[in-house]
Length: 71
Image (cartoon, rainbow, N blue to C red; front, side, top):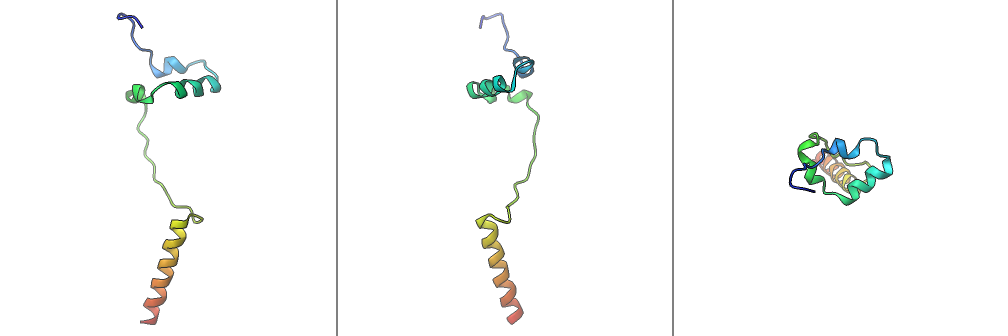
């Protein structure tokens, strides 16, 4: 890249490209270079009822409830 040219925006890099080309782009580029262009995303991780942690917590709660009833 020459000193006078500027980096393309993420939108400019991806517009008109196929899904495969977009995948290749992200496989070969650091997304941190475009962090200021990406929207903030908020999410919450929920435990699946099938996960071991969920089952262990459920068992612990069941034991606690049983002991509380016996008291």
